[in-house]
Length: 218
Image 1: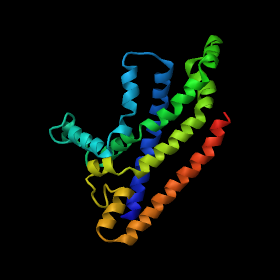
Image 2: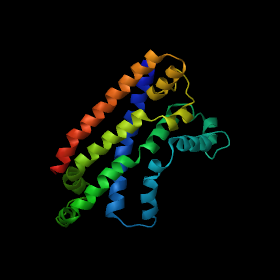
Image 3: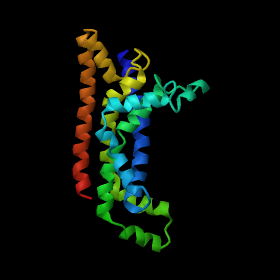
Image 4: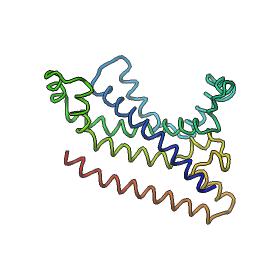
């Protein structure tokens, strides 16, 4: 069960982190480089996962995809969200959404648009401008955001505990496994899993310290 919980946790992180990285970079560029109706509202919504309790997030997904919910009919078409991997991934994506955005936005504002506009004036395509100018300038901010997103995705408990149903051996992530073992008075198993989570947390802290000076060096 411990190995399955670890494997499930890593699978969720492996899916949620790349999606949030891609979405975070696109959203950061949209917020900084473009003006559109609802921009202020969208900027506020990005921080919503930081303000909401993870339990509220999980309950909202439960009400949305559960029986009688707006998207509850998906289960009748063979698309199972709750008490399955998709629901756990959705919950993890939502709670870890802000980190890449909030790391990239200040860097984009700092570098300005002079180089990007110069490249466009010389005939560079938008994607070429992004790949050759924007991405190198924000790469360490993206890496730093990825580290924070990974840490949150691996350690998420509240939202995942509701949408997963906490089915042992099936929908139990490593943080959920720790609680179930502790509640079952298996302190050895709980502490062993805690050590694994602590090592992962230590790795993320070390990674952040590696990224920090490089980002500062430009």
